[in-house]
Length: 197
Image 1 (tube, rainbow, N blue to C red):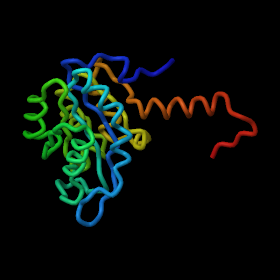
Image 2 (spheres, rainbow, N blue to C red):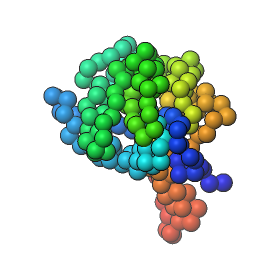
Image 3 (cartoon, rainbow, N blue to C red):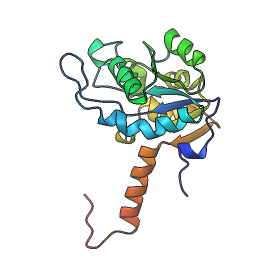
């Protein structure tokens, strides 16, 4: 059975919580040296905002220890670069589930984008913590996974958040859908000889 994608739901007037992979390389001054991962998420992002959805993006960056903010791993530069690529303002929350994230999520209007601070600043992310996931999911109407590079992880944003969404819509982004299709086609109808490693 085909997985539903972001194209299969109507995001107008709804808050979409999207897990993306914005783990981009940066130099010592915090400048992004390769924005490819941000660009790869643009089709899913644009699909939501161009159809009147309110988009909250969550990602990790680097390997912080989960003990709170570490400035060198902040997603603020990513939010700025995303705004440049989208040619529109992108809001940035200085936390993930705290007062700033809650207030900025609630204030979003149709077609606007918010980037949450690095998920891994909270120990609950890599622990797969259900309470942390519940807080992340609390303001969302739709969950979208477009972070293929982290699909193998049991992090809260990948597993516990969709569970916390209950009966609300849960879909794949275009990047994840493309990879699933590619892998499915390769395995179901391989050109012979075929070797998988």
